[in-house]
Image (cartoon, rainbow, N blue to C red; front, top):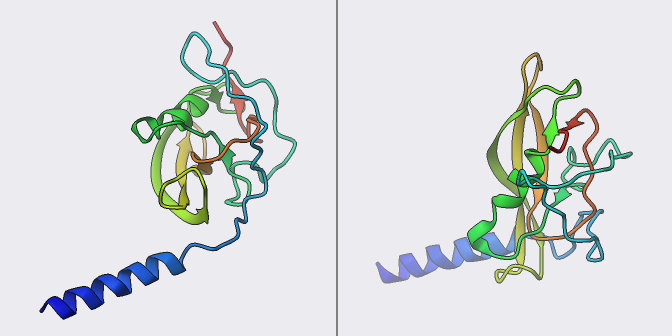
Length: 153
């Protein structure tokens, strides 16, 4: 019985390691990007619209929000999304729906990270939008195409 458990554990371990590519396909990581500024309302101060239609919508161009501790891994995607509106100022709703797309990362003790996928909706939107977030790496933050920006109080 112990042999079966060992073989199963070994198989699962090999499978998990083999799913992580040794090369990252993420194109927009930038360790020189500045730390995001928080508004008094608690969301990120975003000032520029993305010129790239893939930004956030494509797993190779995720929104790189970075975090410093596992205890607050979901806080930066929330801070980012709380700064957005629909294109006409609509209030958005969002929820994390999955994690996917393993990639190598030196910022995780496991040596790999996953992207988080959030589904965004607003009144009148025909089909929910999915955005990819990378919580392990840094990058410049932009408003994705098709979204608006909340006014700071």
